[in-house]
Image 1 (cartoon, rainbow, N blue to C red):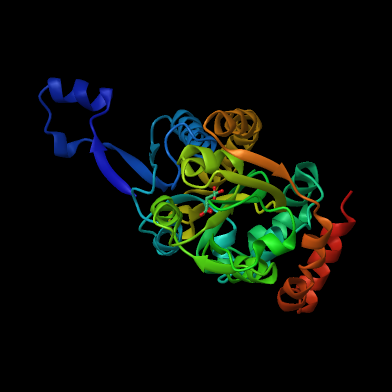
Image 2: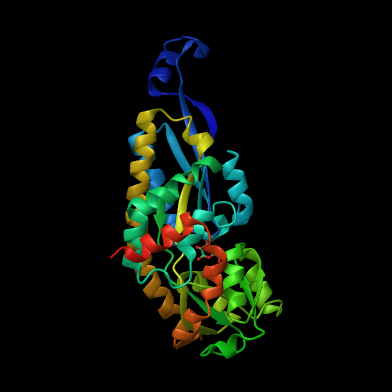
Length: 329
Ligand code: GTR
């Protein structure tokens, strides 16, 4: 938290009346720093700014939020560490880079587990979401909201992916998550973990053939320019998560903590509205930019995921979570 002393109007009035400033009660103003790899205008960034507006208003200016967009504070893996240790106060990230640290989060990225966005919302907004959120706390993080991230699909520079055969030998960039590495390898491709910020040049230079993501991410950093085949595998709906460093959260009063949690819910609502709009716009935009989109018969892709479930859903806890998610209507 960046704290500075601010001259309140009362202090200003007293100063004018000739009193020494040091003798005055000054109001502490705290600026909370928030990280995001996405650019300004992206739904995640705008929703955290909205969160900041709510907090600033409700705290009468005591707290402000400054969003560092476009990865100014680093890639997701690095900013997660910084948030855990209180160097960064707030962070909006995908749940995938948490998979290795917090095993419960992997359940949210499991391939073809969510039947729809509504199904995913019901899960993250209900008791299962609360349970997964709780699992962040021993790792120094407090969840303020689960944001939508649409469906992730394959894209590459070589050819449309229509069958599993088309995946063979492809070098596909993934997030830094063992679950995503396993998913891509199970499809017969070679998973290459790499930070999102390095992906455009990775695709351009042929270091990787493709990647997988939702339309807004594919669009916002212009990956469609260097990987025009977008194939609708829709293999994962791994949501985004908006977290606060527990170190920063614990410094708040109980009333302030409540205010932050409520503002987190408001920001989540806002994000999901912005997302739905952006998803449609991004699809339109990539097509205009030359992307070629194709449908995929998902059955063989779903079947190929059995080893991924065998590898990641081994404990009673994970089995129970998967079963309960499937049972949510
Ligand atoms: C996006 C997500 C980012 C990041 C990125 C990636 O969909 O919003 O947080 O996870 O994907 O693939 O690295």
